[in-house]
Amino acid sequence: MRRLHSAIAIAIVMAVSPSAVHAALYSDNFDTYVAGSNIQGQGDFIYWDNSEDLNSHGLVSDAFAFSGSNSLMIGGHGGAHYTDPVWQFADVNTGVSPVSSGQWTQSAMVYIPGDSNTNYVDFNYMSSHPAPLTWSGNPRFQMANDVVTGPNGGSMSMAGLRDRWFAVVLELDLDAGQGEIFVDGDLLSTYDWNAANGNEFDGIDYWAPADSSALYIDDISVTAVPEPSAMVLSVLSCMGLMLRRKRSA
Ligand SMILES: [Ca+2]
Image (cartoon, rainbow, N blue to C red; front, side, top):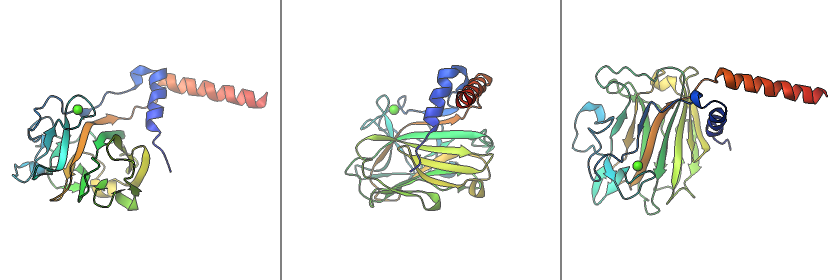
């Protein structure tokens, strides 16, 4: 199974040229919000279709956290149903997205309690929000079936993923029109992004149908994948030259 390699690549780039690594364009750790509050209207979170809906909520929670004290809860809690907050990157009014070319990494930390065993939660990767509303494929955490499914037939067991934090990463190449979804470092799906999303990335809609169990999200970010710096290319070129000399010796 293919493993996520970008973290290793970024670590190499950082070691050679720290200035080559870009800061996250967007990020949220939920720690500045009041636990128990509705996430919509805070940070870059809006309601679905940009209109308040009493059935649409995301709960800031201090039950579990990867960083600080808070995370975002989707699904069921105390008899209430939390679903459908949209983490919006593009301007809500103009719909213009700065994430429309190049390579990007969207990452999130996820926690699924062992007793979350009903229905599912989707991370719907959005474009053209608020209108027209479209999204590419999504990772679907099927808590009732203990599997994670993705676009293009991707599927993996949820065994070993409960009661601990793990990373969910979208590697997006908008020039090539390809999305790759990794769960806990393993490739879940590779799929045609542009066919559904028109080569841009505007936000994520977190969706859970009624009666879904709780799932927690923390440390979400969108980061540009840096171009190799001149220094890195020079170092790699020297390494290649050294290897050729060694082989010919
Ligand atoms: Ca946090």
